[in-house]
Length: 324
Image 1 (cartoon, rainbow, N blue to C red):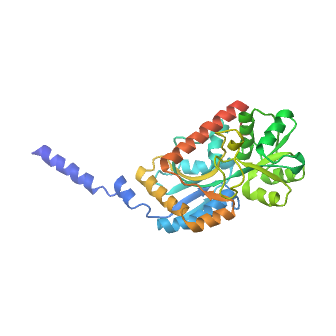
Image 2 (cartoon, rainbow, N blue to C red; image 1 turned 120 degrees about the horizontal axis):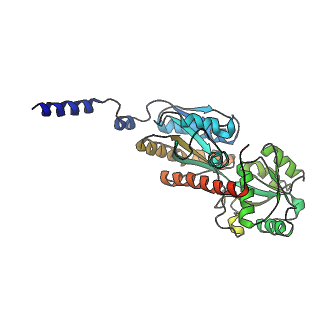
Image 3 (cartoon, rainbow, N blue to C red; image 1 turned 90 degrees about the vertical axis):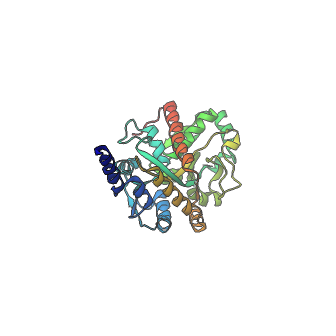
């Protein structure tokens, strides 16, 4: 009889728990969400984050507050999310730097594979290989052919070591077995200025930044770095189409949560982001920024982030690239 009463008490106590994981998930979200953008206002990540936030607010029924936390090549903002409670209320708008940092930094204040839960992809920006007209080429095939006949003679304008543009060029060296001189500049702006001025031969840059120059005939677009052609420039081929299948550099944006976020919360968040990503108004606003929606399943996005880290880690080791 005594054991019977003990069992009843235990069952009653369990039933009375007010904050069980199931109850917490059922009412998620029931307060504002914080979206950490690890860059200063005005950049590409900030533009994407502030574009998505109002629509995500509407879909979630709770305010999504944008919080810019720049510094450390996104490490500071990512660290804040890594140390936040795993409840789905503090989110990181990650981009390609997240996977690149995992490859280039000897030590990080977090583990990119275990301290975060990938939630959903948001957008993708197609980078473009562009060349100065004086080089006399008009395709990726002709650029590679020229580099092979003149090893070490071409100058590649990089916006800085460890950027996605820098690694896009380095990956081309690896897959095409060519040699050129990489000139690092302090940002994409100076690199583009030098290329347009003829001080460099070719570069990789975001589509939105190169279109004005290609339309004016001051630069020639050769190929996009993404695995598939961009819907914004459907006539421009990919690097893979030049004979290098598997080449892909994605300047992606996605949402990550902290370790321990319940699976059901992750799925709810994923569904909310997918609702935003399928909104026609969002598509139109992204297109104005040279950005395309990037939507996939949660499992596929998780695998994508892990694959990106593995790819850049291998490349960084091969070319001895380290963050300074």
